[in-house]
Image 1 (tube, rainbow, N blue to C red):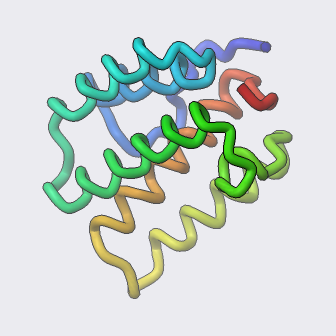
Image 2: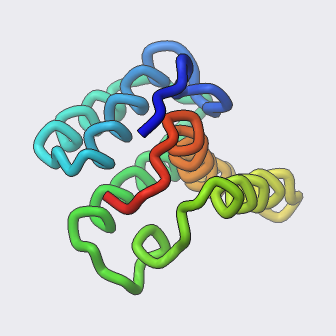
Length: 130
C-alpha cells in the first residue's frame, strides 16, 4: 500500500472529527475490529453540522464496520471493485447524489461517510479488500 501524505484529503468532516474518522477507517480496513469499535465510539462524541447529518454519517460507519466484519457478498462494500477508477466514480456518484434537491440531511451524512471512505482508500492506495 502506498501511503499518501494526507489520507484525509477530500473528507467532508474536519478537525478532531476527521482525525477520529481516519483512525476508524484505518482500523476497519486493517480488520482491527476492537480498535475500530473504540474509534467509532470516539467519532460519536465529536461534533457534526447537525443531528440528522450525524445520524446518517454514524449509521454508514456502523454499516461499513458490519460489512467488513461479516464479509457478506451481498453488501455493497464486499461486492464492488475497489480499483482507483471505480472508487473515483463511486465518490463522484455519491457527491452528485448529495447535491440532489431530493435528499435529507440524514442522506447527506450517510453518503458523505461513504465518500470519505472512498477518498481515504484512494489517498492511502488501499485498493484491495480487507
